[in-house]
Image (cartoon, rainbow, N blue to C red):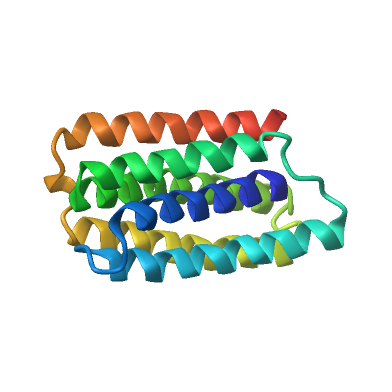
Amino acid sequence: MIRVDQAGEYGATRIYAGQLAVMGDRAPHSAEITAMASEEDRHNAAFNALMTRRGVRPTMLQPFWSAAGYTLGAVTALLGPEAAMACTAAVEEEIDRHYSDQLDELEMHGAGAGSTDPELSGMIEDFREDERQHRDTALAHGAEKAFGYPLLSGAIRLGCRAAIRLAERI
C-alpha cells in the first residue's frame, strides 16, 4: 500500500508541475493548482518518510510516472484551464476510491479492532480528505466545462486505475 500510495502522490506532483509549467502563475486557476500542488508535495514527503522508516522500496516505474505525470499535466494545461481542472477532478475521483478501498482493507484485516496499521490509516484518511477537496475545487472551477469532458475524464480515470494496478505489481 505504501509503495502504491507514494507512487500516486509522486505522480500528482508531476501532473501539477506539468500544468504549472504551461500555465505559469497568472493563468486562470493557477493559484488553485499551486495550492493543490503544495498539498501533494506534503503527501509525497510523508509517504517518502514512511517508506524510509519501514524499508519499503519505491516502484521501479518511478521514472515512467515522472514523465507520464508531467506530460499529462502539460497536455491538459495546453487544452485550457478547464481541461487542467478536469484532469484534477478525474485523478482525485480515482484516488478517493482507491484510498477508501485501502481503508476498508485495513479495517477488515483488523478483525473489528480497528485498522491493522493505525499510522497508515491515519495518513490515508487525512490525505483522502485533501484529495476530495481537490476534486471539489476542480469541479467548482469548471472541470465539467472542458471540451469533451466525459471522454477526457474517462480516459484519465482509466489511466489512473491502470497505474495503480501496475504500481501494485512492479
